[in-house]
Amino acid sequence: MAEKVMALLFEDTGIKLLVATGRKVGQWANTPLEPGLVVGGVIVDEAKVADKVREIFNTIQHSKVSDFVSGKGKVTVGLSGRDSLYRILSFPVLEKSMLAEAVRREAGRVLPVPLDQLYLAYQRIPGNDKEMRIFLAAFPKSTADALLRTLRLAGEVPRVLDLAPLALCLAVNEPRSIIVDAMIDNLNIMIMADRVPQVIRSLSLHGEGKTISENMPTIIEEFSRTVAFYNSGHPQALLDADVPVFVSGDLATAPDMWLALVGNLNYKVSVLPQVMQYPDNFPVNDFVVNLGLATKALSLEKEHGNYSLVNLNALPESALPQPLNPYRIIIPIVTVAGIAGVLLMWNAYQSAKKNTATVQSQLTAKQTLITGNTKDIAAITEQNRLVKAQIQPIIDSANIFTIKLQDITAARSLTDSELNRIIELKPPTVDVSAVTCNANAMTVAGSAATQIDVLAYAQALRDKGGFKVIVSTISYTAIVKDTGEKIASYSFSFLMN
Image (cartoon, rainbow, N blue to C red; front, side, top):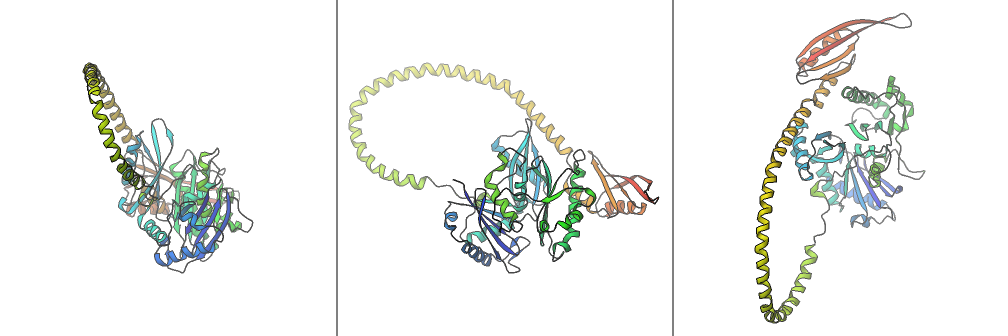
């Protein structure tokens, strides 16, 4: 029998609930929230929002909500991806017992936020025989704790927690793709490659505009910036015109704006596909994240195809449902059995006295056998000592190679913060075509309409970016259009450290 799933999502404007069985959507509800109860995905008034949670449960008819509370159903809760961080980490092959500590140490090294402010969730993804690859999601403790406290006030105990951007990625069956989920108040952009989210950007659109058309300039700018950021780090696998772009949310209802979104990049744009089946009157664009949350239970990553490999449970360990304590069952049974055992022991004692003499003679024979076995054990122990002495040099060599591999991996890494500064400080009239780095320096190459723009960009990198910039080259090229008009282009190359 297919598993019943309840997908619950908190947004600034309301709470959305969806009930599905297997791949079929059964019921849904949307309860609006007063302004200020949830701000930027963070629950501010937990008591009032908990009342709204109970209210939305009551709007679902014939759904037996008690099944979910008692553990017969599965409650999956979505958390806003704002202020969350994502990384793909690489390690030498480690024992499972060592992985959690290794991930935590590496997260502390690569993340720009102290770990005591974050919850970490991770999942191993395919690597090779000599390398372990880990997808890491880090999200604010304050946001998650407020959500979990609210659910407890409402009488709910969730079994699964996921971040909205990761849930949106679950329905795409493509080797590479770009997903743009744009609502009036928030934006998520995800780039998928090798069945793994490679870049995720989430931000609030509060104050940008009251309609999706008013927000389009910001959406277009963030889309172009995200694609440029990915391409700068993957020059051998650029996002070309063959990569599909999927849109969802309010943007899915505005196809006349899709061409402006992709500009001259020539991407093919279509609505985000859905694995779930739903009635004709289901408002799919309003519940697209809930559909992703419900899709988690289908485990599509285990099927043939190109579905996302990342399907993790981000629920903090302290909030996971506690397993049944066997001692609560065993202790009463043992107590009753112990009383009966006392009575039996007296009878057994009387019988044991009669058998003592027989056992004593058998014991003497066993002790003689043990003495002989002790000599054999001593010989085997000596052989084991010699083998360990031979193994230790091999272990020492392996440790040396592991340290070297870690040094090589660290030397080739380029932090997101450096790339972000390079892209964010770029004037609108300057195009960055490549960013390369080595152990000592980085090279930024691109073009601009005027030489003044090139020098202004170099000055911004030096003054605001904290880089030491050497202008290696500035070359002038005149591009002649079909009309005979000449357009000036200044190619440049900066050497920075």
